[in-house]
Structures are given as structure tokens and as C-alpha cells.
Image 1 (spheres, rainbow over the protein chains, first blue to last red):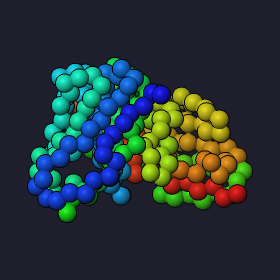
Image 2: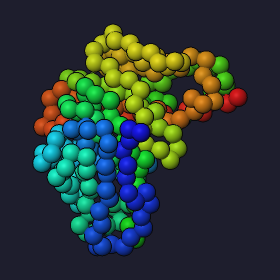
Image 3: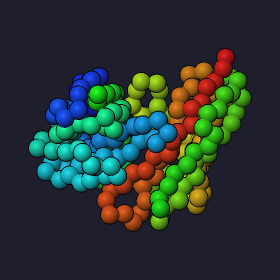
Length: 115
Length: 112
């Protein structure tokens, strides 16, 4: 089944404890991205990657890191999480060229709480 | 500043009662406008991409239209299974990065 998977689905952590949220897709997509969704603010783009080893900042990159060493994986790293990073996170992927030209497939989401 | 707004914030319809959702956008040139459906506890699901004013796309009971400043998602004879949050997003033409801007969404409830 074609899908985007995220792990973990739920995570409660404490301020300053480094964490990684994994994202993997099995559709051979070149484009991948991370969003956070907050009530009243909608979905906001954190980082995106046009292809392996190519990543760029989105609207709200502060406090996050990403890497794209393989085509299928695009982990989101929070080096020192803070309470304002408590949110619902979505990973998405699409074919080459990104969402303007191709359907974007979203993962099921990761609900992160930072205490 | 690039911006997307959606109205109404919430909409409650009786089954079979047709209506429209609005997405208004302000961008420096439009590369594409997207509609997504999001069910509670799930990721958004792609519905349509529109590129230029006058364009229309249909899928089952949904029809999306685009003008130079807004898009409408028309729902004809909705069923309870159409209940979801509908998200509109745009990609501006001229940006420093591959930017996608989402609106806050419209929560649709269809009552049997």
C-alpha cells in the first residue's frame, strides 16, 4: 500500500531532551516536507526537501533540523525541544516538482507534547 | 504579505442541502491553489489543484472553482460522510523558497 508513515504517533517529552520524529514513504517520491498544525494557525511549513541531500527552510524552521540522506526517509530533529513546539506534526511527500504540480500525500501525524 | 483565509469557520448542513465554502487568497502571483480534506485524527487528503482563473474541477459531490482572488468548493447534495475539515492552500509564484500557505480550514458537519 502506498503510504507515508510517521513514528512515533504520540510523544510526551521534557524541555531540552533531543528527539527525532521519523518519516518514511514507499512511493519513490522526490519531494518531502514537514508541517506543524496548531489551532487557529492552520498548517505551517517547517522544512522541505526537493531531493536527496537538498533541503530548504519553510515558514517556521527555528528550533528544527532535518536531513535527507535517503530518498524514502526525511526525519525531523528537535535538538532542544521547548513547550512552544508542542503541536501536531505532519510529514508529506509528492513526485518531483512538489505540490504545485503533484498531489501531496500526508502521513497520519505525530502529536508532540513538550513539558 | 501572502495570506489565505477561509469562510465560514464552521458549517452545519442537513443531508442533501447544497452549499459552498470560500477560500480567499492574497499572493504575488499564483502558482497553484489546492483543496484538501482532513478527517479528525488523520492527515490531509488531496482533493484538487487549480492553476488559473476560470478553471473548475469536480470529484463526486465536490466542485472547485477559481477566480483571481478566491476559490469556492461547492458541495452538492452532501452526505454525512462528507463531514470533515476542508483546507485550502496556495503556492505563490514568486517566493524565496517552495512555499505552501494553508488557510485555517472550514469544519463541515452534515447531519442525516
